[in-house]
Image (cartoon, rainbow, N blue to C red; front, side, top):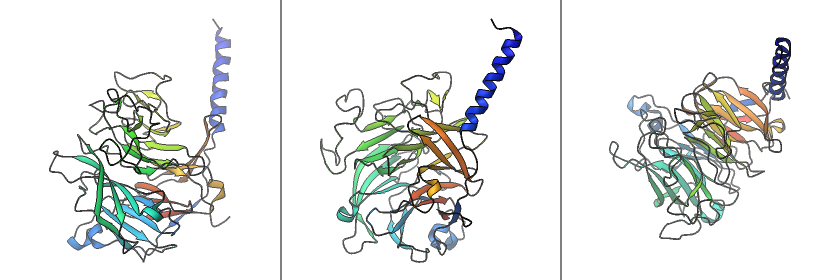
Amino acid sequence: MPTPAQFALILLALSACTDHCVAEIDASPMSVAIVPALPQLKWPADLTGSQSGRNLDVRPLVVTGAGDGSGRLFVGTQHGTIHVFGPNSDGSDRQLFADLRDRVSFDPKINEEGFLGLAFHPDFATTGEVFVNYTGLHEGDRERRSVVSRFRVSPNDANRLDIESEEILLEIPQPFWNHNGGTVTFGPDGCLYICLGDGGAAFDPQMNSQNLQSLLGKILRIDIDRQEGGRPYAIPADNPFVGHPQLARGEIWAYGLRNVWRLSFDRKTGAAWAGDVGQDQWEEINLIERGGNYGWNLREGRHPFGPGGFPACRKLLDPIWEYDHSVGKSITGGHVYRGKAIPELSGHYLYGEYVTGQIWALKYDMGSGKVTANRMLRASGGPITTFGEDDAGESYFATQPGEIFKFAAPKDR
């Protein structure tokens, strides 16, 4: 039993250790220019609401290149429209790539449904295939569902999607209007990864995230270049739960997630990064592993959640980073910067806050398993709906009203 003096020295040592640990994380602001990416962009009146005397947010949710070397930039909106811009565009050359509003359910008052995900086939230049994730049309709560589909580009116009070519790959019933996830993206393995939220309401009342017979609260992985078992896709043989149909769906790659927004792959290392939106107190960033259980709704961030909450344990993977609701209340996950315009940003994971508009650059040391930097890039601004990359690896983000920004080298460099 230490004496009071010894105890005071222990507390002082612990305090010094804590200060030292905090000091190891570089939290200094980073000077990065944020500039309009499409300064001459004018959204059409049917998206802004001006044609009907309404004031609507455009809600861009996807910004991406096609990976085909064309240098085009594509922007998908929650309404169900996809727009294409030419290389080095100022925004004035906007074309409508696809209008899917006749099959997408979107209501601004129900702000987590709609057109939520867009991905181009890794060999898009040859296949012309595009993959989407959206909320299908429904009446009230009946037939509420997420739809994952394949489309093909028009054979007569590379800047138009053939909307009659839709092939539905998956339809996943949704019990509530929120927590739909929505990311569809290709990994370096050529498989399509699909993010689905826990089904909605609050607290995951149906325990979907921990239920391996449910696709909700999961990241799925499918092979879209093959068909098997009567499905328009195949389940890769190395998925973690293949061969146990009585216990788990074979499509599942990772689980125990609440509402991933968004998932991305580091184009240099292949690591999978996910921002998972929190419930009561904690927003988190996870590195996604094959078969990983990320704890929801037994844990929120690195903390036990609710009356049945679990302490930290080896089988429940904690996030590499978290922040509480005194900082922000809804994370928008981004991607690891691998562009050339801002060398000092290379290797940093970009992420932001939907509510406060903040943006940070997080640096993580894979060897030590520690975050070494979390640097502010923007202190406030409009609600951040998504991040994106062009084919060259340069980075963008969008805000709810419809602004598209690009990260650039500081002017004083």
